[in-house]
Image 1: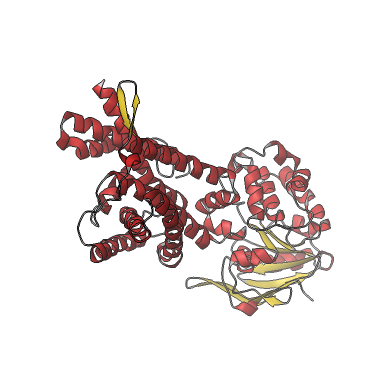
Image 2: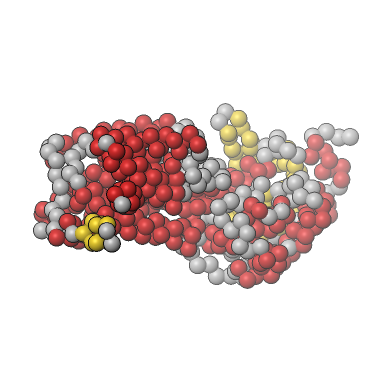
Length: 287
Length: 235
């Protein structure tokens, strides 16, 4: 029974990784941009929620709804005025610029908040659990997983049921022809990054409620997110959820064998998938 | 007054100059054909008018206003739509989604809707849920034309719509042109097939090496005139 419990905990942990990864997957899927500052933006989102909680005395679950539009605006401006300038045939400029952004963000957070660990204030909900037969499930991991599923359903609806979603897919296919249809690719990319940062804010909420964070943990979150995206197949949102789950299960199983193996087991699972399916589990046909 | 006009239009790809002062005009309700051999600059001319290639503002004017320096989406929003060479359907979108993308971000009023495009090309209604790129070349061309029509453009730029298609399919596609004209669009048709171009055009421009070498109505251009303008030598 302990193994069943371990695997279920791993699946739920996968929800958190899928939240880390969904924004990255969205941005990569639409504009082939790998945002190396993604993890630092998650950490920044957690600090933003913390500031709102501290200044306004709000619950983190309320503060996140104020943080979301702020992060959307930040993402829009960041893409429109900085990252769009790096897009082109050469893949190096976006990597270099987002790497620089990552370092700048880490240092700005260090300057503003010091290197001390922080945590969003917990309440009864964050420590509650429910009994499911012989297994006890934390409410927070369940909420995290449910949020990840909702985010992915929401993104799929956006992509396949709305006019904006059509424009996302058309621009991703061929930005020049999309502009001949009256679409402004620069604005479509900016909107996509804005939406990615809304998802980042949701991920930041759960990051900050479940564990301590400090300005330096961003790159590790990026790695988990990146691995989940690659396992799932670049640009596939349900694949990203599965990728998160595979890493989550590998980590909890690894930790159950030996606590020191937790992180390593996740990375090994990633490498194994990469060996067997180099393009991920659900690669898009036209990538 | 010309509805759309180019004056001294030049275009470059890096150091390579592709157009050398091209002057053409399109009047209201007119169909103009641009003919010429490969590399004559026909597609570059279309891309310059549509805003894919930026120019001096005054080198392209539409409805009396300079549009040469505007971006493709701004030019499209004013009513100049393009059927690009090679069709360029969006592979991620179904046939119907490809058509709908032509109306992105605005409500246009006019003859062309999903219903009327499906009436023009009935086969597309049957294939509406298929991926656009799963269709035959001719059907893909119909989607590309329908997609441009969905914005109810005042000017429709058609770049090599018969390229790579079987003669019987080309005939089907050209059958639609009178209906497109009747619905109120003025057209510039780039075509390598001279007979096809002559059949639909009110006026013809012949291009060679980035310049207009001949212009006139199909009636007053002789085969020899066209041959000389096309190939640059008398035979």
